[in-house]
Length: 330
Image (cartoon, rainbow, N blue to C red):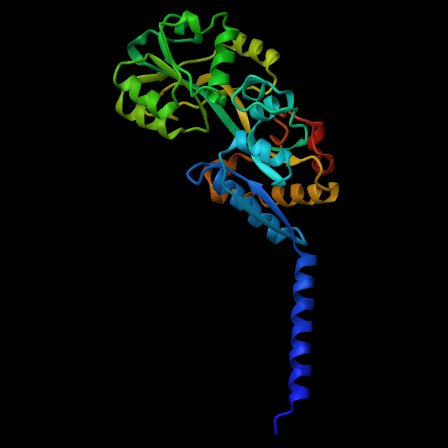
């Protein structure tokens, strides 16, 4: 015979068990989010791999990645605590912290105060400044660009800031060119093909898809940044690093080319708990094989290069791990 009281008691017990299990899961899993970039870029798969590493190797953490508009959007998300970590170019992070360039009061991404809740976590891989010129332009160095037709990237972009800084270091400005187009690399590649410009700047990981295309279909070359000028630029803007594009990176590029790079970096909100930041750092660097298997650029990540191009103060949790493995002394 059906016992109503017994049934009610059983239901209550099941509810209590389910509630306890849910509470235990909620207490066990602290959720963190790493902000990446567009789904077609490099940041997106790398951020996804990091989230997997942390969820599987840091007790009590449930990590996920989120796509975004990349560096400029990410500094705002990170500063305001909407995400705990983010992939951001080191120069963009520097500008945000110091309210310069696109974050200056008159800039397109102006902020009312410095975005000072950003801390350094790790350098990931170089974002290489590539100046691509038509082979018959007579351009061999940056100085040879003067009086030519160039493209420098969209207004307010990191590409354009890099181009302008390098041009300024060589002693001239946009008025010294026959033409300056503020367009990104895909459009600029088409403009070179059509003979509308002589050269263009882009900052990206190598090999860059748009450059692969133009090198395989047109007679173009990489323009070098001479060593003396590179030293001058590094003295003025410390987030740059010297970089050599290896021979054979692009079709017909038979010689290595000296240039500059900024770094794609992983930043963390300064208010993240020190122990958590330590555990996240440890888990990432003990699972670099996962990063390398995810994307070619993931193979560039190393403990030796973790502080290269550091443009912000290091988070104390990450610093503790780097000190433990001797990376702070390198």
